[in-house]
Length: 122
Image 1 (cartoon, rainbow, N blue to C red):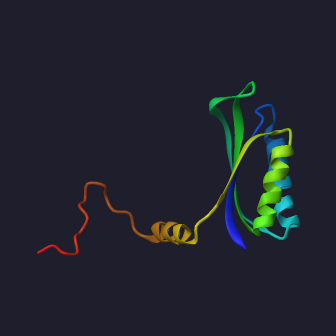
Image 2 (image 1 turned 45 degrees about the vertical axis):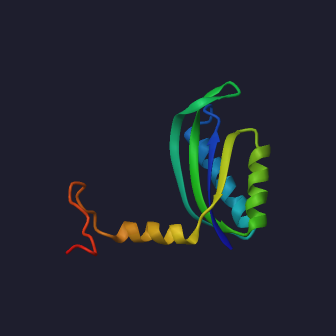
């Protein structure tokens, strides 16, 4: 099983309840393929960087999940076919990067103007 993150943009005409319904449907696709959803973040409506078709804004959803490569490909295929999905981006997460992100969350924050300590300072 690999860890993935998918971010997709839904049509702006969808209400919040419909966006939640679509994100639950995506989660069910993942679970139906033997995967599991780790986190779902609905980012709300945002303006697109450029117009896609006649769409200038969309509802963004980011989802982190674990699944097989075949399940991730199937999810991507189904999202491309769905009429409410404007764009999608699927990324396989690197295990080393995930470990670094987890370590960064637990490490205490240091002030920006504080210089880093050098190991070879004499």
